[in-house]
Image (cartoon, rainbow, N blue to C red):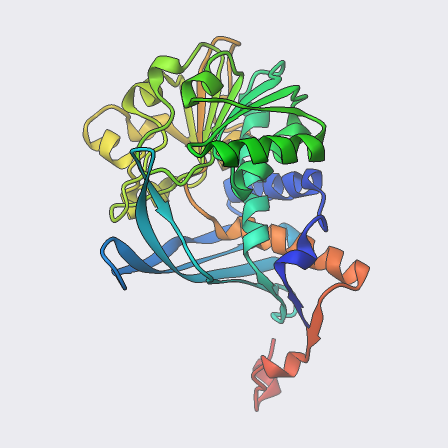
Length: 355
């Protein structure tokens, strides 16, 4: 039996606290050399209209501790737009985003899932794992740049690792930030306040999280204060050089941690690749989250340090654990559509060599 799960069936299926634990396990096993992943691969080509792109993306990884392997693919169209004078990369229209979950013991495919809700969960949880290690223990106020679905899970995830009392949200469209503040306040019980500028949101915050579709920096160093922890989730590459922090903000960080260091060089990710070439940042100063959770690099040393986590790429290990947890919950609750396994299996003529 192969389970098919749609986005709406997975909403509220997996508690965020359990997702955070699963993501931390994935990075711990990666840092120990147990979990494995292939670098994210993207295909882009100009398409349909000026500034438009056809985009195909695949990510895969396995986590032995959960006996799970996942392949995530998506096929979509994107284009660059201007919002209040700043560049944004948007993905209009429908798209195909799928996660295929495999069992490492049987080699069988267990499930085919929509990836949209899973992606929001795993990104929020990954930032929260980093914040749990890097943010001050007394952090209660978060600045949030962005008001989409990724922004929402940043709030729910961080509320699991710190006692948030206030979230200050900014996005360029006033109606969007006001809607977000009202909805997320009602859902979480946390005071979420719409702000009129990124600067207003960032100043006097403990944790600053950017979850935007920006091309240009939205976190400026002149707004950063001692003791802050910064999160950024925009990856970008040489084809689309997106940055959420300016040079000064990066230089102010006393400790920088990333999700997967190799992807910076493979994709020529704008947040670091250009700064490495210019000598603003050294490769040896970039640490991985897998190192941090295993105690193989230092964490925050005092309440005055500025720390920075770059959630720099989608990783197959994130999908492997998140999809597995979703699958287990769905089986337990009888959710999803079942398809015969025989539709996907190749029968070997010689059983001697079968798994």
